[in-house]
Length: 543
Ligand code: NAP
Image (cartoon, rainbow, N blue to C red; front, side, top):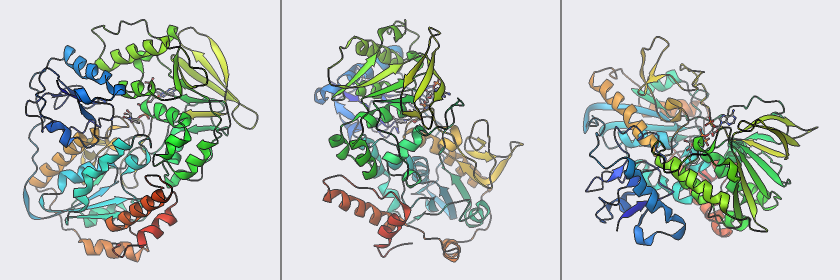
């Protein structure tokens, strides 16, 4: 018997050092360590001790015998990873040069309180002499954990608990509701800190660049995601849900999230922290079918095997794939990675499943390229060109969501690589056009490496960035004189900025949970900033 890692794995590798026989992969310098959607336990080597279970922040690890039926396949998925890559001891990244204590105070600002910023803080807090100040433009922390992870993935959201110790630390202060670039400049931050780490993510959506994309009813999926998650930027959005079919363009995990949210029964949604306006609107939805378009074939689909598997277990929803669409590729072929092989296998199984009368449908079309959206006042239909058969057909729909990834935006005062939509950097050190490091300025997360990877991928990313910072500290490049925390607080006060600290966020959190309890829901989020600020001030300990 062995332990098995399952769908909600966040890949932050907290389980890895806990394993006494080192049987969890991929880690360290393995080529797939940064791109892996999940980690795997070698069943041959596992000694059933369960140490990994205690460390997992998202409850993704089960004892083989206790696997819920819908997760059974993960037993095979875990084992299959090691068929192609037998367990060997793997090179770990060079020992983290994190010092234990500093001879003098080092003040570090982190901009962005999402997972990337929190993992960066975790690398710093605990070192004697470090003061960390965490900024976010919203009054609430946790970035995409709060406003990106789908509400039906509450296990994943529980990863925020693993950051609780940071916020309780006396070396740590939060300045939420502060927009760096607008309320305070980069130069001012640098004047108050020896180092500034930007973890601002990738908040915009690229365009498809096809005619009709600006019609009402065509939206970036990110707007829909922000709306159902109660992000204040998306509070006022409306989506036409009074249509039998919605079309989602793109083949990533966000496309699957969106499809599930469009079709899940309201009663199930109500058991999540979905924003109340989205719950109310989706309760009136008449959508029966979500058509998901992948411009390439199934073997190139970006969604993870675990999420694809989970679709097939949704109650009242069929997954429809035309048998002809399943690649003519042997799922057991040696050239396929374990995830792709499972996706092909699952697709074949879905293609064989009979449709259930009365069920809603998630329909996949691969090699399907959106060409044109058409309608008089709003979206009425979408033309799709088939790259495999060269056919061309219109499908009727009033809602098109493009789920084709995210893009970083420039940060005022810093260089920007418009082609890659990232802040140019060398392993996390921000560099200018000539490749010279900008003193004391770093990046981590999606704004450093682009919008790839799951939540835990940000941990290794932050370790790499903070390792550069320690090197710079050791070499004396972070030795400049800076102003203290009191001076920073005074500056923000003088500008009339209502700063929300950790206690303020806790007050918002409590108020949301109380609102939820009154409606038998886990929480009812505030979706507009003034309401958040009012809730935050209910506590006396605003910073
Ligand atoms: P993604 O994984 O990068 O997928 C983007 C998809 O859009 C790809 O299928 C891509 O196809 C397609 N695409 C790009 N440009 C297109 C165009 N012009 N026309 C048609 N299709 C186009 O992006 P994402 O889904 O936004 O996810 C972002 C990251 O968050 C990923 O790393 C993802 O795994 C992660 N995430 C994880 C979870 C989870 O673990 N449950 C949930 C949500 C997000 P090509 O491959 O052909 O370029």
